Amino acid sequence: MKLISFIFSFKNEEKNLEDLTKRIHNVVKKLDNFEYELIFVNDASDDDSEKVLEKLQKNFLIIIVNMSRTFGVGPCVLAGFKQAKGDCVIY
Image (cartoon, rainbow, N blue to C red; front, side, top):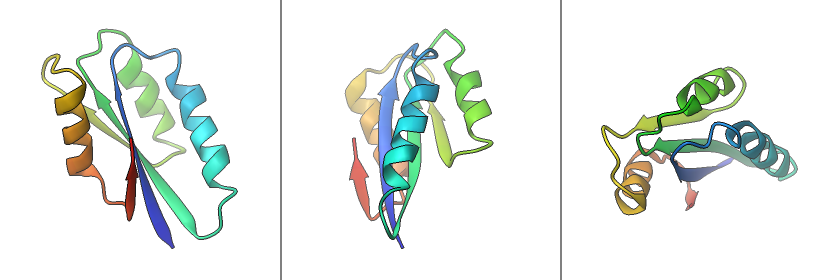
């Protein structure tokens, strides 16, 4: 079984996170011999993004990385790469 790590850097995306998670799940479940992890790097959101992800963690393999302040895309992507355990990484 191969593991795919998906990395998402985001800020204030509470309205999109559930749909994104379900879409990724529906695509990967069609692939034979693949599992996945979703790594969401929160670039200091001030909405309910973290709460939405915590709820989704009950049904999906989600790793949440909360940045201490706004860093921007580059540092967030690198933080996601540090957490990735997959055989391949998709950003």
